[in-house]
Image 1 (spheres, helix red, strand yellow):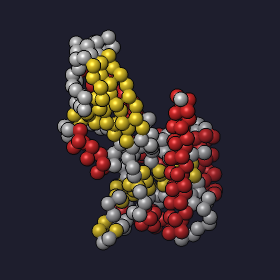
Image 2 (image 1 turned 45 degrees about the horizontal axis):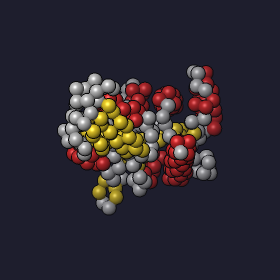
Image 3 (image 1 turned 60 degrees about the vertical axis):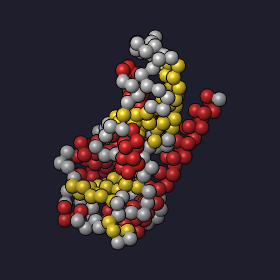
Image 4 (image 1 turned 30 degrees about the vertical axis):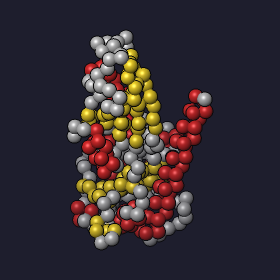
Length: 281
């Protein structure tokens, strides 16, 4: 993928976070002129603003922005003096504009493809999310069949679980919302441990009885997890909405919790941005 516009279309189609770097002002000699752009994701760089140390620093700055894993868009501008600061022979000044765009659909990762997960998939098909249902049992994944307007829902996918739990969780999307509901209590525990260790979950929910939830918290505490880290675990799931017994009832309750958590996360980011703006003013 060599051109920024092609890459932009790809990111929109894949709902992938990116930083668009644009040359907005040039004084004196510079590698490329105003309007030159390149697009950076965590996986690739598309196009060029002229190469050299300027481009190297711009890519590093974009990667630093992406590593913050923000869930709201942002923009910033930076002036570069090519001669004294970057030792480029051009010697002019270049202003770069950084536009960060997060994915607009939130990632929902469901470990387990049982009856509750299948009900969650039916609801998730109507939500602004990319849902991934993960299980080691192919026969259960085959039961996750969700259609919209008589075609398979394009925001729902299934995936066979990997044997290394921590590697599998590490490769999940940034800022994901996790639901853990597998057929194995020990696998549930490994997944929760991996998710809390990763540290960027926006919601981490475990299907559990009160006694199972208490045992998990006790074991995690003995492994060194702090109270603030354990507070990120929601268990049992759906309890804040009310008691539920049937798979669809549980699915409705937990999806309500996920949406509530997402709304809270978005509001917190808006407040944080406003605080920075007020201080700058």
